[in-house]
Image (cartoon, rainbow, N blue to C red; front, side, top):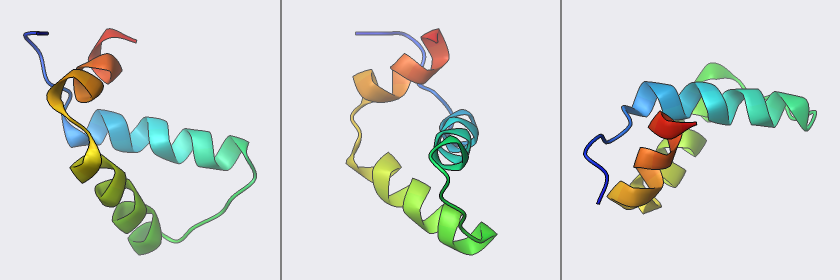
Length: 53
């Protein structure tokens, strides 16, 4: 198991960047809500992936 777990902020910035590249535009509150929903579904290994990339 990875030693580091990505902070939410690292994931959020990647999530926001990916959505913008796909042409989706969300407001700050919508973006945070959507990112939070995905973050809650991830396990520690999934979260650690964002630290390694």
